[in-house]
Length: 394
Image (cartoon, rainbow, N blue to C red):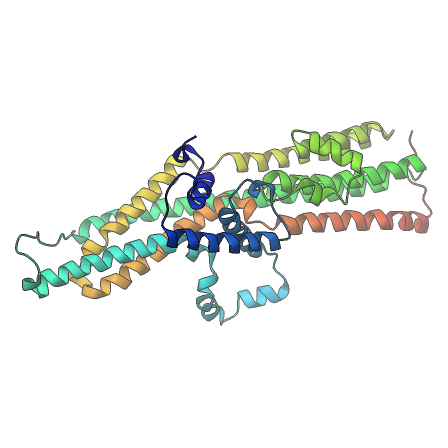
């Protein structure tokens, strides 16, 4: 197999090992240093998502860094965070931490390209206009684009960026509500199970089993919607080994949890009207899981995303040929600033389009698990204190 036909990660590894393609000695030694550092970083990491197992050490180290930064951005605000968020010193804080911004790191390369193009155009105009003897006479005059086309297309570009960002935020909002419905309805089902199931040995076993699978439902949904979690690591402490094996063998883990819960309720011996209430909540869970799968599997139409990116880059590449008559050498920082603002807006839209990598699903699942476990522990105490024996099966 030729190295050029291999996947990117394998081509990098093959080329750096010198098995098929020649490489300079300095390049080879530099790659060895990078590889050693990457392997040290990966070996020190506590979690290795399954998707990274087949990557080269360099690609894996980069992916782990991106995952770590992404996890740091998944936050649930406390009262202190809200006070800091609306503080009058937030502007200074945001400027001081601009180097830590994931958006800035993502758009750094295209911003530098626009700034470099602006510097080349400015230098050519300067040498041609201010110092004519420095350039040969046969060189063409500097290209200048009128301001009117830029002004006319600004409205269209603004609408594209605004619609793109609004559509991405709508997906983020729907994802937050859909996954929140999974955890909220799971708590409600746990409340119904603990209240309606009898306090006999069979009823107590049914309560514990239902609570385990409700927690597993939330966590397996998180694993189902991301590619960075291991199911056994997330659910291993909740389910029994036999239950975990069956869950791992299923094709759709969240739906398997719902199916198990449905069987538990159908064979619980509860009155028909109570089983209907539980089944309605299970239907709500199915709808919420389907909504999350739909958001994950259907992005914003690719033609819209690609056209917006192409239009934006073409517009930014025209900016350097427009600003010289108005601002001279100041066009270089101005072009960089304009590209930073517009590319940042477009990057935020891309960032929000896949919302499950942004939302703090770990906190939602942990809060749901803590709530269900707390209700399960206090159920017996509440029943004894109220003097009730639970609802007996009829």
